[in-house]
Image 1 (cartoon, rainbow, N blue to C red):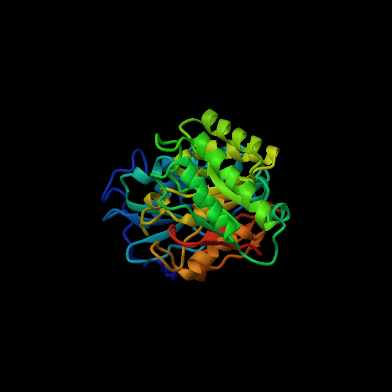
Image 2: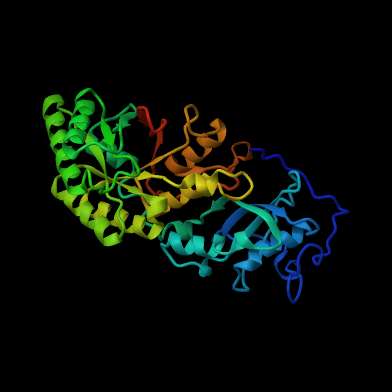
Length: 381
């Protein structure tokens, strides 16, 4: 992905009525304020905007702010317009009072709720968000974080090694547990359910939990190490999800798992709070992410979803792999890995980090590297 900067031509057409009708008046008359100075408490968003033919970039960018507006948002174009083959980077500043505290759901509803279908835009891509400290402090974040997890596992100074049980669908619970035991006994720290292992007729969740717990106990007794299996608690309702997490705690296993995009941020935050209160680690799978983040000019980048996950809560999350069957770009991948792990990350456009981010001591998230079909490495600093 290119992050080169360039300024808009001074001859750019500014007649908003070309290409679409803005309504009562042009959006740029109210929402395009290049002189605005951002506040430390503003949530900042960097959008990659592709206007419809004939729509000037100032008007398209102003429309991004206006479409989901309450009339008090301010558009700020601090670096000017960036020309990228008829794409432009626009910056929008949102006053903090527009958002409910501790709610990723409300944040996304406000920032990306309706604007992606706006007529003035051929395409729109949310590249990055700057979460101010005042807002970050309203979130619990990861249930435990990197250091607490290493203390729980008594494993330091190396990556954690795990794998996904294959075939992911079709095994009985007993055979699934046997495969889990063989992997843990062979030296892995973790095994895991895949994203779509929930409670199918051939393997109900309660049976799987029991046989996997038995495998963990046996492997721990034989190796003298703490082991774990990511028991997927994702379910059709929040109540059922919590019920499965409660059963995992009663079995005294160390960790559960959630599909946070298909399950939803409200469900994920609810599970993260339960895990923190009850001593369970929480592994996060990002199933369905590519529907949202794969296109370079429409949707949102995974770094935004990664920041949202850190706020919503999770102790590890799948990150892009630099090699293997899934897509990933080295420097950009390492950029959002830092956003997951580190407490303070400087703006770095070479890695497409658009804003300096201070997490105010919020616990970090361990990124998982590796394709779905091989061993996976979990790196923390």
